[in-house]
Image (tube, rainbow, N blue to C red; front, top):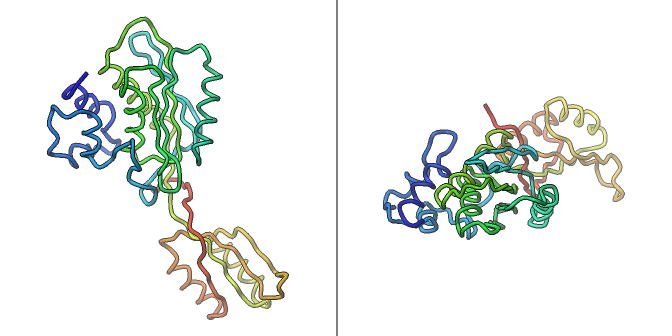
Length: 270
């Protein structure tokens, strides 16, 4: 399989997004029908063999571990998706699937993990080079998925699918699994330390919780003898609104100190 067949199969099986946007074609109008898959991906701005587009606003992760099965020409393709925060977690998930389906013909894999999606890897596990792991990983890239591992287990049904058929089958299997299991939005949050006088601490904790803020810790009697503190997790985009609210309800009597940022998986808006 070369050139046109590879690119056409990728557009049909992998690049199409659920919102109807064909991102690859729009970003790479200069790609010709003779372009190979890897060059095609690079031209689109997402090379799954490199660092990718990063990890932040607009990214998603799989909702939960789950499976989806696809039957193509008597071959069974079973996609197992799972959350993974590190390459080690991804590897452990892959090994668990291998043990469960020990008699399968292939266990092809792809994952994207890490705070900047800097860890990306795919494996064809004996299928022709570029026909399994790469299309699987490209689905994750083009659906803006991170902290996720995909394993497609194949039970060979006796009919060879050809390289184009394999690209379509492996890409579609991961796409169908994502659609069936669902995803969560990854939203940047900031850990904020709120310091307030002892007399106002109880009332402030009540106000924080009533207003719907996520209080992750409270220390009314710090060992240092300083004022009580609360740990509050605030969406980073809402920090300014939070500090304004805090100043209003405490009449300026509390101090908010932003700390580390992290991404939290939350249901997508709408």
